[in-house]
Image 1: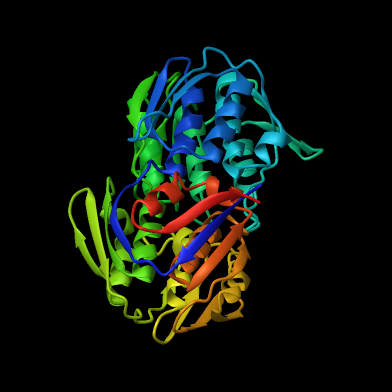
Image 2: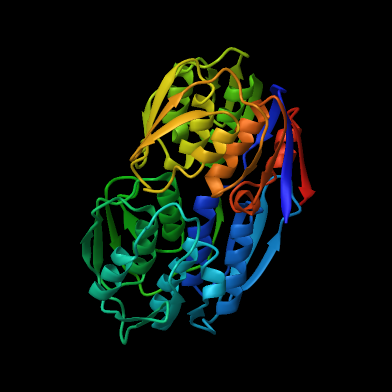
Length: 424
């Protein structure tokens, strides 16, 4: 098993090209199973989650070719003439929660599925009740046993009106895929408005779906009998962009982020500016400049898009832990997303937890430490802390990191970071 070794203290200086979005790639890949025609996705990031999903899709009957040789994102071609197998096994689904979404194309195209209950990062309960309610109301017969969902439908899926108690991104993705091939008009209220939802909806529309309202809290889908192939470019990863913006804010220096949509992380950029960071925006580029002074403390609360992303909470906490004062972070999305706190404490961070709230007393500087990653985004927070710490730090269990950050060591090294991957 690998570890990452970082000698901190260097400011970050240089340019980084942002990779394709993990959170957009996965539903777009699964959506390619909805048609028997060729789907071509460009700007696919090179991540273990992508590799896991490709393995699962191939097991269902998809013919997939992947080219990751370009420095400007990979290309995936998928043709699924027929669904050959309808089981998504525990061994694959346990590695990544998004794998559960394959239930949508299996039911919509084949009418039958056996899909393991989902796994992924242990950052929250994230129940599947919404998914099961949607399936039942669309006419699907369900049985839960031995850790699997057994699903079948005898005719075309029924259209439904459904209101979410919480604007879940995953359930919104699932609803879009199911409803695109249902009979009649379906409506989803209190839908997620994340850019990744818009990317999936636009892809499905290019495939012949009839979706309106994506990007708002009410989405309407008029089902069609079948979908066609398409060519789509995966949008840039706003969480990766935000992570690098926070990193340079913590270390000092100046980096330029290319191939980024700054509007999608506007809430983060505004908060960073409040903390004393200078940011220059253009259409597809960000320049972040930070001196070596301690940042001013800023309070945040995570929220569904366009609020502060829960996927950047851990990284921002790493920055606030060395701010010049006290800050408060409230986590409203996942009930168990403070697991990085105990690891940041190993660097010297002074953080107290009260339920869903973290109270952070900024210290002057981190000390180096050996730490262990607990989930995907926590991994990035530990890298930020190590980059700004005095001395050499080691980060173990970095397989979490590989799930969502493409070539992060190479990108940081190009900006002057002393960072190396080693065998443990």
